[in-house]
Structures are given as C-alpha cells and as structure tokens.
Image 1 (cartoon, rainbow, N blue to C red):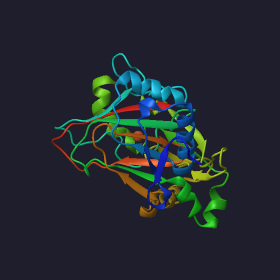
Image 2 (cartoon, rainbow, N blue to C red):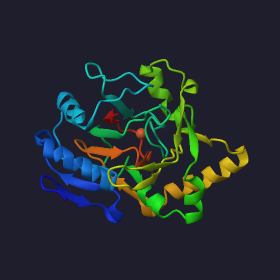
Image 3 (cartoon, rainbow, N blue to C red):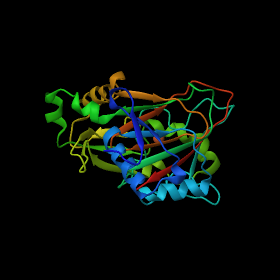
Image 4 (cartoon, rainbow, N blue to C red):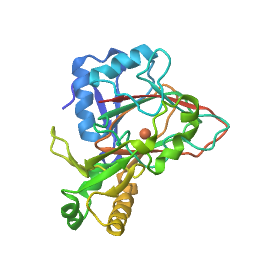
Length: 271
Ligand SMILES: [Fe+2]
C-alpha cells in the first residue's frame, strides 16, 4: 500500500508514525500520507525542519487552509494559529476531548500541529481517540439508535473557556454564542467506507429533535464510550514534530500536566 513512505502503525492501529523528511515529500508521498490518514486517523513525523513558509506550502498540498474564526493568525502567515500555554498559565488551550471547529458549517477535514517549544518529553502529550474504533465497538443497539441522528455543535460549548487567555490577546471579536452548526453523528469515509462517531464533547450541546433529558443521557453514554483507553494513543511531543489528523476520525485532547514551561505549537487546519 505504501511505496514512497515508511509507515509504522501504533498499538491497535490508532495512529501511525511516518518516516520521511516532509520538506522533500513529492506528490506521490502526499497521496500516501492521505491514505495513511484514512487508515489510521492521525500520523506523526519526528525530527522535521520546517519554517513557517515551508510549513504552509506543505499544508496546501492537502487542500485549502481554513480560517480559524476565534483568533488572528501569525503575523505574515495568517494560515498559522499559535496554540500556546505560557509558563505562568494554568489553563491549556483546547484542553478536553474535542475535534476542531465543529461549530462551523463545514468544519476542517484535517488539522496539522507543529511543535516549536514543548515541555519535557512525556508532559503535555496530545491524546488521540479513534472514532473508527469507537464506532466499531459500539453495541448494535446504539449503532441503530444514532444512525440518523444529528447534534448541535456550539462554539460556546464546555471547551470555550480554555480559549479565554488567547482571545484576550488576539481574539477576532466573534461572539462564540453566535456560532453553531448541526451535523450528523455518524460520518462515513467515502474513500474506504469506514464509519466513525462524529461528536465533539467540547462543543456538542444537544441532540436534535430529542427531549433534553434523553439527549443528555445519550450524550453522556457516547462521550464516555468515545474515549475508552483501548481507542486512545498519546503522542509525546518534542520540538520539531508534526502531527496531522483527520477531524472526521479522531478526537484529541492535550494533557494539561505541566506548568512553568512555555509550550508553543503552530496549527494549520485544512478545509
Ligand atoms: Fe483542537
């Protein structure tokens, strides 16, 4: 399946490592990285050497860069959002299980995260939960129940408070209460017909056309199911690593287990 890249799957096929200098990735390698993303949901590259210009040009080979509605981008490179936790801060941007920008009408398909500064290896990991695995292991009763359901995804969901420090510095002025979207709970990857659960605990507020109490009970069950340890891989960052994930397949959750160190990541989302 892979001729241009070397792919090493993680445990339970949740994520994979790819060995390639991504500055030298040609169109064949890019196509194979996309196939690996379809298969494993998230891929990791260590020891890269990207400046902002080469990062953006690499990203554009995956599709059009998406705007992040809540924060202004990096000076000179508006496609890049700086995701950081400063040494004196306690809250971590994006802390909690979620998938990116689901409150938009067409959420970005991929997210890329490149590490500039990171805490000691093993701290500030990003956890990824495969929603292929989560769907596959859902009892049939629930598979049938949620097959045609939709949910409300809000920018003002539980995760919104983790943005406050960054919004105070470089917010776009958009009121998160004004941004929400409705999406189906099940996604089907048309390239391999695999199904995944598309729910973002950080953003989802309710199930459409369902009574409040029943909606809450169903969401509590599904949120718990989505991040069971057997569906999860935790990536250990060090500087100059790149992760790319499919927001249709993976939930992610940065672990807020450090202080006194500056963690800086450059994020690009792809439509
Ligand atoms: Fe995120």
